[in-house]
Length: 416
Ligand SMILES: [Zn+2]
Image (cartoon, rainbow, N blue to C red; front, side, top):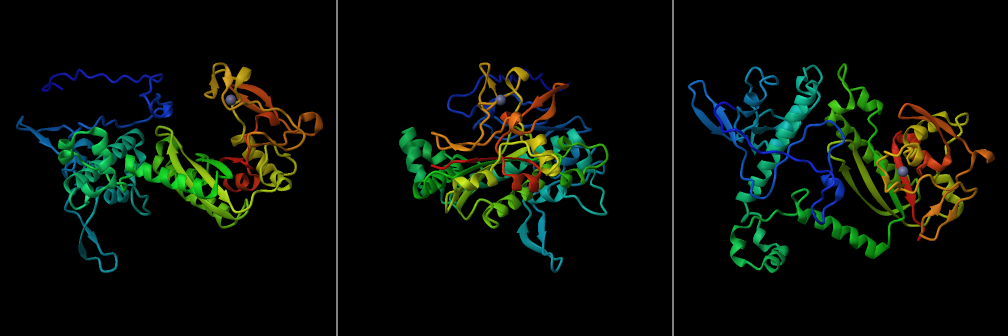
């Protein structure tokens, strides 16, 4: 800082401002205390990393320099160990010999973040510094991928991309085409990648109509599989590596339950997307197309919106009261995130009804018994006050799935 002109840039986060046409949640302010890296705009060339030598000389180095990790994170690599560089060769696991294949930044840092028996995983113990290390190295991984695409445009035969014609049509400036870099559909998160998925989804809808089930599955940081791997004093926020990895395995298992074990009947096809709200916990949105519709007499046995009887099924009672109660919002909690203009945007509390009925919009209104006719209620804490909630506040769930996965799994069925 002594040698550099002062940095006059400011970062302003305006939670109420969203660029036109963008998803509102992508640009709102983070709600959790977390470390993130922001790389802005298409004009970004490379990071400006300046090394101050003992001779007072200043040198620019690349983030892929083998010394970058040790210089930037002396607490993590106090022995000055090499970080990632381009010439690390893959080892044949059978023979132990070097192969001609190179290790990518992704391979290298995945390896570094693994939990190993008989080895001190000190990086995983460093909390916020670990966060910074992870996002920094992820930016390095993206840089490497983008550079590969940039320098291998002819190999990737980008000019033959059918969408290039669209670009030419849209921008109208053919002179720019020579300098334009095409991000192929294989680059995760690129517009072409998203476009392909959207096309697949539309193809399903054209062939099979609208999906029958909409399921939201949220990572539960209280899963024992996560907690068992904490180092002393850690909480879920310290270990995004664990929450992401375990969520992925649980999601795979949940899909097996639905597709192979046919919890809702035979599945024709499905698709899902995994999202992170900022860098918080992952959740998946799942669409299921069934071969046969769920019959009205079956609905109550696979989907419920009631608090279970604690005496009959204490495990399910625990899962539902911990994960499936909406809000509470409204008068009980005006600051709940679902509140828009003084009303709950998710339409809670719902009406109590004595029988599941098929609504006009294609979604059934589920059985929600009042406490007068043996419906259950429970006491939960809202801002340190005890509040009694009944079946009006329960988000629809599948008892079998909730009990098996012990997490928030919202199941919406559409009979149209
Ligand atoms: Zn609400």
